Image 1 (cartoon, rainbow, N blue to C red):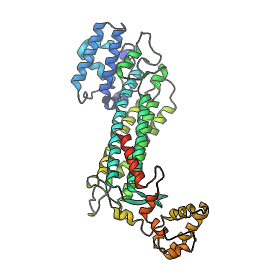
Image 2 (cartoon, helix red, strand yellow):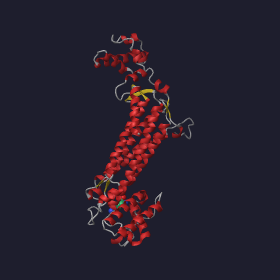
Image 3 (cartoon, helix red, strand yellow):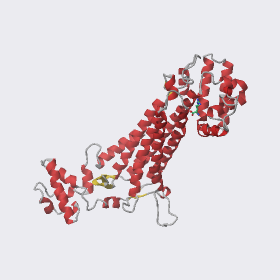
Image 4 (tube, rainbow, N blue to C red):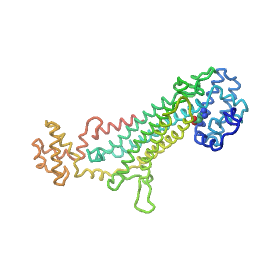
Length: 457
Ligand code: ARG
């Protein structure tokens, strides 16, 4: 027999390389608190159902609480144990002697590990929610600090129509709001109890799984013992939620990188989030934003990695499932760090209104306005679009923007055009006109800001 939890049927020890290869303690040690908490709930249930005597249960609970106090706040030292479950049991044995061995009655590491993992990710969801909220508040603060900056809005990275910068920033607040919904939704399915499934088939002991669920704050008990220990869909959903957060952050960071380039020059990135070059003294590189864009790839990799681990696994537990944790922990750490850095960057962001407005001078982004003008005077929009297109072609030929045309030149294309048109084509006027709900007109953006604040809290 070896000193492993499963040593009874073995005569020789495990190969040293294999031991290291299969050990999960270096990364699952971070679930030490969850392992103790779940074990305390299990022990209390074993006592209250009479599966263990009240004295044994009390001794186990006292021992586990002692470990919790001894290890707080940073957790136990990593030793040569196989995993956090073995480490807890061996520490408990050092305290209690053979009674410690009773804790594992009616339990397997298979239901234990995913109980710990679910508890850990439940807290991860709460941390993500808080970090998302902090980032949303930063976008709101930045939008409020730039209430009337006008800039080009793009489609296909071509000037489309002018928009308020605050409107553009608020777009991210709503993306992050849906991310928070997704995290909350994933949390609901994370928050279900596997413990009591034992290895895969349940157990002969008369468990009270509901009692354990109540003590641990799980909203439900998983109904099928095979499903309870075999699936990791909850972790996949968590990774998918992280991936979409990273998509949103990455898109924003891409914009920051463009906007901070010399060609745009629309923003001053806070110095604290940039670095210099060892050779080119003038450089102020947007490293924070670039890294976040890069780390999106890393988080997507974890999502695809776990899906791939799962796709060929027969029920129930297989050791492949141990690959769930490093991926998910890294995705959580990475997403939290990226949210924190994004919030800091956004808080310190300064737009240059002269540059964003200057980008609209002498361009064609008021062309839709001309079409809308004609359409509101009764011309079918298709024809109005055509007329406006001809005006654009004429301006291009003359080498000017729409703001460079005289009223006479404009009138050549339609006698519906009156003297009021040129004033309607300035970027500010175009923005002011977009009064439809959710549009970029200042009054609408003010309403949106108020709603965003109410939603974000
Ligand atoms: N470290 C393992 C994991 O993360 C714990 C479960 C071990 N179960 C087993 N039957 N070997 O999945």
